[in-house]
Length: 108
Image: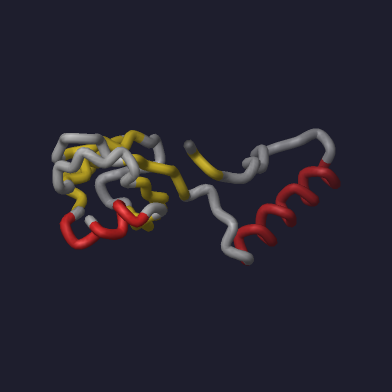
């Protein structure tokens, strides 16, 4: 699931409404509200999980925040094995638990 806010169109016929949308977007950004997050659950009984998102590039910084106790317990053993446009591969311990949930921030 991607969590986010409505984008501002590049152009609108109603310039007043367009400026209002731009101001709202800037105000959201200045309060830390950005379209940069996605939820991720690690695969069960596997050592890799793929994260697909068009915002990912080879230069993106991916920040994983554990959203469950099981996810927090594995944080020291999780790393980004590779990433390219649209895809990152996350390496992690193989576990039978299906509750290893993260929120990922994609920056850049």
